[in-house]
Length: 218
Length: 218
DNA sequence: AAAATTATTTAGTTTTGCCTAAATATAAGT
DNA sequence: ACTTATATTTAGGCAAAACTAAATAATTTT
Image 1 (cartoon, rainbow over the protein chains, first blue to last red):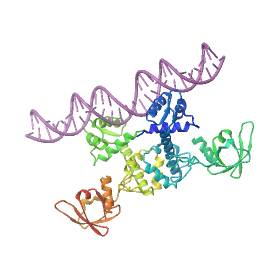
Image 2 (cartoon, rainbow over the protein chains, first blue to last red):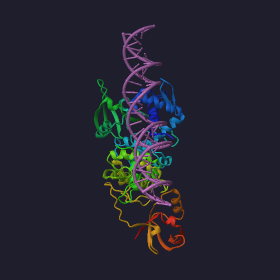
Image 3 (cartoon, chains in turn red, purple, brown, orange):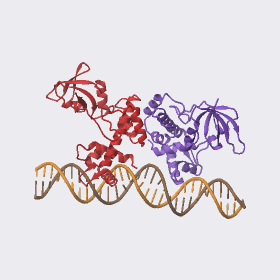
């Protein structure tokens, strides 16, 4: 058995582990809005439970069991977000907080039935891939941030990096929503802002925004 | 703000308050599977928060705010049970435990949207009435337990009192499910068991079962 | 390489929500 | 009414999960 709190830590370690290197104490403290000392305490506990590899002063990484749990939480989070948007008509910037609660509901049967009910989606409303029952992410799309795209390349919006309400509302206002096609027309040297073509119109967006828009390259 | 634990207590006090008299410490301890001393602690806290009227040695009862919270939890519980049965195809004996978790998810918007998504049901899969947004139960059906029904009265199954898996599975086996029409043919004096007509056949059931089957009288 | 800075851990504390054991109040039996 | 039984409360304790403040390790700067 495990607590919601433990699940939050495992999810955070997963989120902060790029490539094979783990997550540092401070990075976790920052991500979870806690003090570093609290992180140290919990990492010891998670290590004792066999979910995390932890060495003093060297940060933490997930081992097999811990990764399975983390991916299961991610799976639940993304399935619930899909439910909230597709079935209850929430907007994609409104669902994160609720999904943070729903992801901790315990029942494998529930998750599997929800998955079926939603038609076994492979991506959530933010464009993030949904792990399958076996905790595998089978993401075949070539993805990149809009800020990295070459001029005149046509791409499709498939998600965002920072899913803050501010960003999502901005994108909604500019009608830069999931599935839209974009061409990068020009990159302005002085501030790296972009002129893009979308919805048959031209639009300028800041580098900051472009760095947070995830696109699929055809 | 309130905790899941506090919500559980308020729900228990509501469940144990028949008519206007409140719930005793021991009854609550029994209902919640806790020790009486834990109940005393929490009743003081709930009293401080203004949700419960508590006097030493005299048990507890809900005041206006507490009752509103309790009915909101009941509403959420029953809506989620309805979702699980109607949308995810769970059986009615499988949903209680999951709904116990889901009822604590915080978001009024979510509950209201779920309500709409389900078609604003007034009864859950066990036949229990679902409080509306204003925490009112508007139950217009005349209900009774099958054990109280007069001979030759035709009634409709609308719920159960004890929703244990054993009972629900027994009813399922005998095809005594929600919505079925029943006539009481005979009440045997020596053990108060009933001979009933259901599904075009006759069937004997014990008093114990009859006491737990909730029916609507036409 | 030493000093200064930053990151991490340790030690001790707090709050929540439960527990046990003992004390006290209420209710019931004779 | 008095004794016994039951119900309830009080007092003290424990584990989880956070915190602060101080100590120590690692890293960076000069």
